[in-house]
Image (cartoon, rainbow, N blue to C red; front, side, top):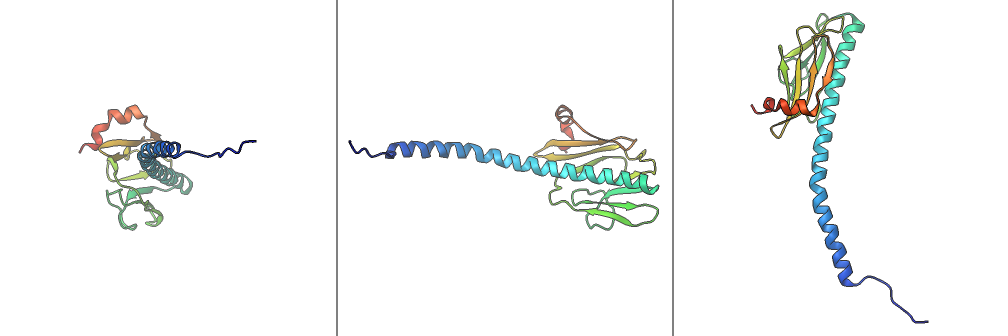
Length: 167
């Protein structure tokens, strides 16, 4: 029986490593985009949950509940990029504070700088749109109706409203 050595030649190994390097160089930029999309989705979900929590608290407690942007976690302002808080308007107490790590580019376009839910769950004076800007484009939008209902916009609506992030 002849004794044959089995293994890879140097040329085969170099070709394999070259192909691997090409695939990795293509995949790494795509992973960066995936991480950005995950951060955008996490922010959108946190905001959605906070708005639904404020609406539910208004209905359950039968009082007006406000959700507003807050940079210090104690007072309301129109800046939603540092976080937001949920508070009872009549009792003046804070129910919840949220300071997401990645709220960059979050904006509110609507009446006033805060949202007030009545005991019916409606927000008659607070309809508007939350949106996040990413690289001068609208990453996503949450539209709030006067009835207090939230809706995530479609990709085509985001493309139509691209001017939101141009300013």
